[in-house]
Image (cartoon, rainbow, N blue to C red; front, side, top):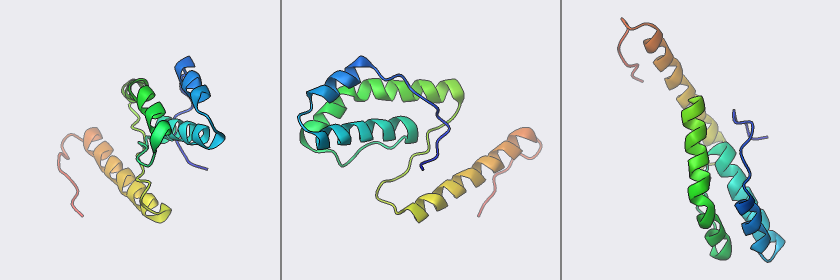
Length: 119
């Protein structure tokens, strides 16, 4: 299971309309997979081709606005994962991000400790 703090998003009628315009199940699956990965994981699709790419691009502005709204409202950044990396590298990156955030929280809670940790 892919972990995310995000619990949901608005699934607009336009997503459904575009989905229904796609001819075959493979295209439909690629479109929905790209939409869900972007909304929940922050992964921008970079491997879409043809009509599926066009379908996604037609909704990208709406999708990006929802993500920006979620991030600004909650303060949570969607954890971007590079689809080219293998899962073990992705976990290492996420651990480094968590370590940075812990250091940042410590500095914010202790203003007299206004320095950065260097590794």
